[in-house]
Image 1: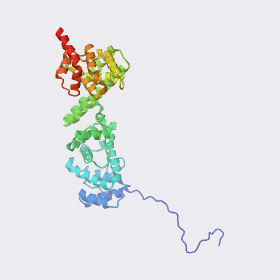
Image 2 (image 1 turned 60 degrees about the horizontal axis):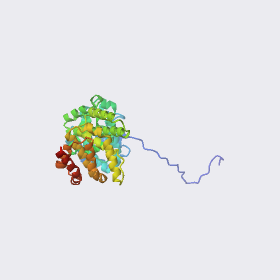
Image 3 (image 1 turned 30 degrees about the horizontal axis):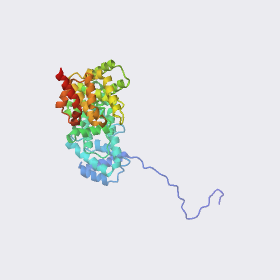
Length: 411
């Protein structure tokens, strides 16, 4: 035996080391197999679902390909929506009629598949995101079908589909700028609201981080409150218009309150504050009654309230009223607005026990500073309509009312 030859035991087999050899990727064969299931069952989605579920196809590897077949009838070329080579079927979402009756069965079919194979939700998200980012590659009628499918998917609570997977891809500048997103989202809203409330829609928008950004769906040239109102009113979505108007109004009030809080905290000159508030009211077109409410809230929020010392609370509140009486006076310009101010004081005293006993003193101070007229105070005392805490507050105000009436008689 040569010295270079290694001895071996006769009759034994030398084992080679095992290697992890990955099976070759073959999405084309997978797509053809799924298409064949559609064709064999003539597009009967119940039968298709049963056959898909019982097949030994590798869905964990080719999940994206599966949903390409669901949406377009076959495999699409990478990075596009163009058909790739291979078999295709005519029962896809893109090929059906653009109405809920035709598309709903596909939604229910997808739901069945996801219940058996929940891991596929990520693949559905991937494919929807890719298609929505490529809206310009679809025909107008095809975009409408995608919008209806998406709305029905949320309406049917399709397992695990996150709203941001739908809304965020739509915000590409070129899609919005070309005016492709607005018709899509309009069709989505209209279809979703057939079976759901506006509150449900707002909930989805909030989860998708879009409830405060509805204007982002509009091309920049049409991005205005007037443009929003005109578009969605014409589309028959008046509740959505009203919701947006309310959001805009609330944002204006919040900005106004924030600005005023800063001015009060900085102890700005009262004449300057009055001019700034007037300008903001004009720019935001805020109702006078809301301005009065904001003024009182901000002034009282700035008071350093003591926990238990009633006298300190009284002194702080009355000092604030006296300091900013000119500001209140500038905006309480009618009996109606003065009455609203009393109601604000009433509600604050009702909601905060430590202020309950301060009500007559605050009203007296507002009277002394010429913010409240005698007639307004008497009207509230005799005919006030807000019942909250009224009985107690009316009782506490009786001595001051008696003084007013006696002073009137003497005159």
